[in-house]
Image 1: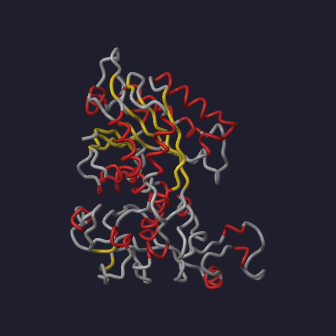
Image 2: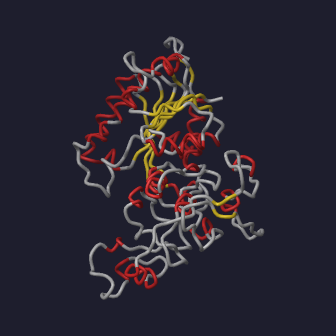
Image 3: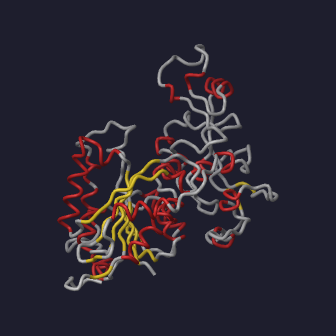
Length: 393
């Protein structure tokens, strides 16, 4: 079984993917209290280091006694996604944003643990910002840590069963004392390409969820449906067995079959007029002048039921006007956003509604995580120690 360490774990989207791949996660690291609450509820058996990653491992770290054994545990993979807000195309893209330096702690843990392979996720702008300045810095840091052979692969989530056009990059690296894959770029790209599947639409993802939402954020009764559910809905729903996820697996952390997180922000009367006017798939620039002032055409967007969603973002917690339900005159709910990220209905988010939306938007979609874990698994199976290599496993 593949042994792994998860960094910047968030609510656990990437970890849900590697769980589907059958990995053993030895430890997860996350600093946000609300994300940790969600993580602990959905992964009760995985040791969680709740705190600043700067305090994880290292001789002077308070976590050394509890997690120090990981340094000699022959870990196969270290994976995770350092916060991307400092690089994100929709943000200020400040080169001095302190979050831009968090990759250094990812590299530090890789250097200390020396896994056979690492996988780091982020937004594409991480490698293009400031003329590739951060890409070069990160590449050099991994080289100094003993991972000169790396490949950066662009991924669109909708190509791998997620009903969302989410673009990210995944940085794969192999330890220097291992050989076996001659052309890392071409090989990993080929493995990713063969896993592509037909796109899933918004309608296929969320049309089975009820129009009515929870008024007080409490769980709702779980309504049974007929065989008319799409294959994707069967994968998500608690009451269906699928080859990838059984009903028992989805229910493993639930006491009862209930629909959790099916709540959303209230809609003011002024905004309701806009919602009622904007058509499925349309943006703000389709609105009459009386309702729209002509700026920021993406400020208002209604999901197209016949296409995958555009990117689900953490900024939803501030304003949901870009995520209007394709059929109902309201914003999408936390559960609907989670469905569009490929979280099944048994994965329950905790904290305030604001915190839940942030957790969903920040997550690696589990089905993308599964694909990346499968590719990393092939990479692990394809590399071996050089004859004169070091002592690591």
